[in-house]
Length: 385
Image (cartoon, rainbow, N blue to C red; front, side, top):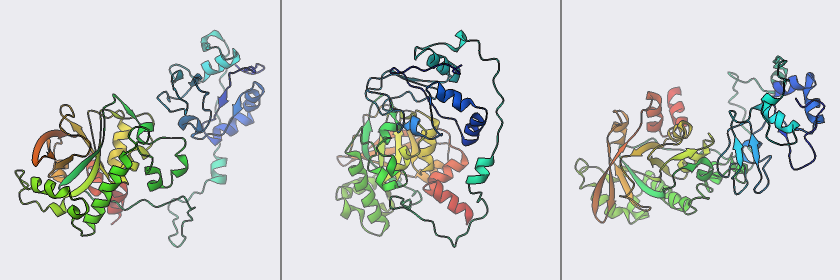
């Protein structure tokens, strides 16, 4: 399509990312890289840049058309994000090539009859054998991993307790909450190997006070786990604990054994990328659950569970609790062993406990065990014992 043609010298630009090194090598051997470059395309090795905004960010109010599904707010690093279009159904590689050959004017691939000789891809794994360490089953515990100054270990996470107390640390009533709003991309990418450093940006675009609230809850929980009286760390808990022991079935609960964690309510969280940091960043600073109407993607819900947070749904509207309130959920481990369809929670305030009705969509046996273990890391550790 592009051989012997030009993308032009105007505002339009074409960027090509071969999907892997073997694909890149095959294109180079067959001369197609040279053809693309001669037409004005910029060819780059495969990496996450064009997806999360570290590369090929469109100009302010610019139009971006992509062969990948990345069409949602802030994803491309440009504000406003209107006019950023992407979907394989809209623009496959052929229609992008046809548009480039036409100087950037949106053009259907059907207008060109050059598609009858698609070359066969010859896969060659030489680059993997030459460069990728094949270490499976060859672990050497005597060799210590070398970590740079911004590579930090994951905090230890506790297994789920029988009874939990959730502090509402953010309540988002937007129709949809994207993963970019849960944890922004772009400027935060340098912290991706620093869990606590990255977590400082959690919900920073949507609720800048969230991190401080959740970290305060986390500090209280660490104090409790270490043997301290949580009510000494957070005096508001004294009255909360008094109410807990008035709830039918919880009269004999030792409140010092109740796990404390933060909670985010959002109508429909997790739209967009699959990045697990949208969940892990909540977890490492005290997150214990999400409560939602629905989850925007299965991926985000899976990430919530893999990081040991409970993926609650709320029956009805979120009118009974606000930021700063506590929600007590008794018998949660037993509930995770049941049918998940009817879980009682209690919003505690003004010396009273008001019941709210929660449920969890179907979970696999492993997902239930992962949440009870506290996270997937703990689950895998337990399996090795």
